[in-house]
Amino acid sequence: MPTSRLYREGKATISSGGAFVNDAAKLTRDVGVAIAALNGPGLSVLDPTAATGLRGIRYCLEAKAGKCTMLEINPTAYKALRANISRNKVAATAINTSIQEFANSCREKFDVIDLDPFGGVQPYVYDLMKVAKDGTLFFATATDTAVLCGAHHAACVRLYNAVPMHNELCKEAGLRILTGHIARIAAQFNFGVEPLLTMNYKHYMRVHLRLRHGAASANESMKNIGFMSHCAKCMERGTQRGLVPKELSCESCGSRLMLSGPLWIGKMQDKKTLQGMCTAISGDSGTLERLCGELDTPCLYSIPKITKALGIKSVSPAKVISYLEGHGHRATVSHFDASYIRADVSAEEVKAAALAIASGKD
Image (cartoon, rainbow, N blue to C red; front, top):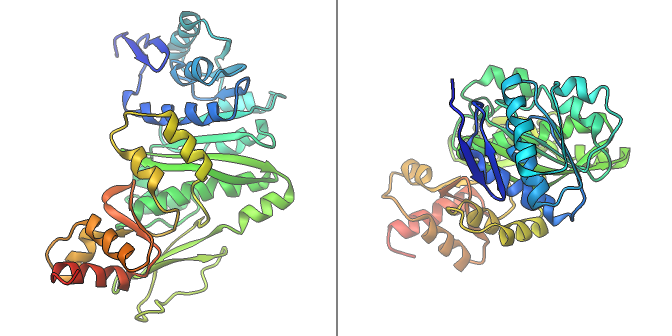
């Protein structure tokens, strides 16, 4: 059994009380608190998977939440949660109940809902939409990345109603599957979703969305549901809009396409939110720096994968980016991995850049 320990993060000091405290998730908490703070003080917050209360307490202390409701069903963690609320002297309410029981009996609607379960989000999103309203900030963390990234193909189909990818595009496809899954459930409650910031970090996928109520918003949101495509032969990739893929063969070489979806094919970041969040958080290892400068275009390129397919020596992703920019294109490194880039070009143009650099013609 875990021993009790004191843990300090942000302005919060908590005791684990023998419950689990995930130090590695600090960045996900930093980002959520920063985005909430950008939306002003006095917000009502629901932390439906509170554990020891660290996340909810930080919303109170750092984002100046007006009210925070924290749910925890585990008796050991609930005991620690109550003690930590008292220790930090915050205006928060702890409830020893499940998400489902709470959502089906609560009449309150929250400004912020931050879902951070152990594993996947899919058992909880539907019920949490019942306590959302127009403008609600809906944040969610998924740690079932092996499912979302295609290592457990059947589980992704079963749990997310989506076909994953299991190649260099797996993390992007997984993050878009997660976003699309939430968007499709939100649409059932007449909510559209506006991605503010989405990210992959260590073994987490994290989405920060704003909900907009109304059939028109939900319909508009559903226009961003579609498929990602990847050609294993020529490495071309792209997106297709709609619940049924229209192209099954690669337009460049005629080979059969690998498809992933349904998933979110729209914008994944809000520039104003990104800028505000990056200003508010400092000292990160580089994930946020790459995220803040990353192009918001679908389908990234793995430079090592491309050079291996071409049978040439390794080239620097930075040199590929510089080469493409020198030829009038936009290109950036990806926060998924420093060896991945995003660019507004085709796979053939990225391959041409790599070949030129490898041959010394850059």
